[in-house]
Length: 579
Image 1 (cartoon, one colour):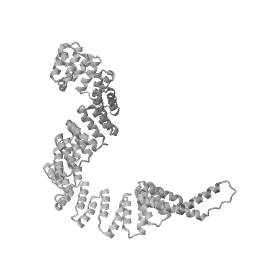
Image 2 (cartoon, one colour):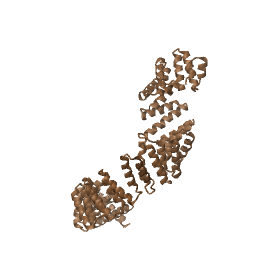
Image 3 (cartoon, one colour):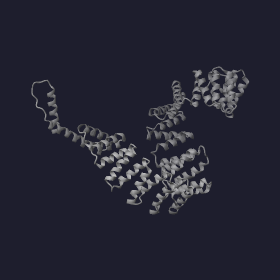
Image 4 (cartoon, helix red, strand yellow):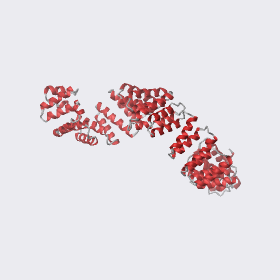
């Protein structure tokens, strides 16, 4: 309260002094002003300390900065700002404040260490080494300072000087892990493999049962492609621990390179049967198989074998079943994939990625009822997930519940997703609007797909066909269909669409040419729609008997378009009943 009163008094006095008055105003003593400033500065300092302790670094930075406006000569505040800017990942500012702290107090060890840290973060390793050198001379018993000097020299690529520093420390404290690791890294960078190995062997002699050291030694030889020496080390590891996974996998890979497939499999299986082998490392090893299956089918059996072993070793891990399901999916075994996705969800229902794969698998296998049930659950459990509503829209579309499908798809768009998936939503919306007779909205949806995905030949084909069926904008339909054929020139379906559009435009000879191109493909000759289209074209080219023949053939193949029976019975093309 007193501070507030004093400040108000000063403010009033200054205001009065600024007014044009003949009255005499008592001036504020300089000592009182200084006292107020010091109190204000102290208040800011302690407030900044409190903010820092609470983890509110940005507020602390503001408060310390305000303090500096009142007192520019307190090195501790510059030091604190340096540390705070390090915390908020602004190394340039951290360095500037550390330099100022050291300028104001060259004797403070912590200020100089902060400066060395700032140099290091700014990758000014030579400068950091100079500071650590000065500190280590001033505090010769502090081996950490000398170690940091060695690290700075090493990062600055002064390898010889760094090795001298590390050797000095080793002469004091003996063989320790940190020193050995740093020295072997330097030797490896200098391609001095034997010296790097000799460093690590110091540790294996000191602690022969510590497998990490043997593993590092093997990696050194592996990196230098000195396989016999690396394998000898791995053999040593397996003598200590016969189920050591990394050693088993390393030897398995050696056997594979030697063409010994049975031994490769045997070592690999033994490693994956080890329950102590971390599941995440197993998954990291197997995951690339998913990408390789598309180009190397020989990996399929191996991938399924290894994922099976992961499930056996970790039967309560959802990710084990999820990975196995992914493997079955890539191997085109959807039933097995579904079983494993369900097991993964039973163990952990919180992972949307697994629900996504389950929905995708149901859509792929056309299990509409299951897709509808699961997608409805997903939209409730994950109401902000775009793909849940997409699959729900897809399931409702398959069930011909177009209004519900449209609602779900528009919800997906409101949530937003990746560009390619948004295009899929608009494509399905186009189909749903078309089925509902909302042609303007259907056209708008297809146009949006082609804006997002200009080379989507499937949408071009569907869109152009629907336009032709309605008899709307046939010029646009012809252009879209032609573009789809340019992108997919060997598609008999697209040829049939193009022929049908030309027919609708009255270009019967061109239509015949294209539909006969389509019918060179066996699948087109079995397609009832293509056969009926051909009959329609032939009739309008005055080949009536041949037209009836193809209408009859279309019916025999299962065509059920409205009016086909009348065409056959009356032996004439009925325009009013076009599809």
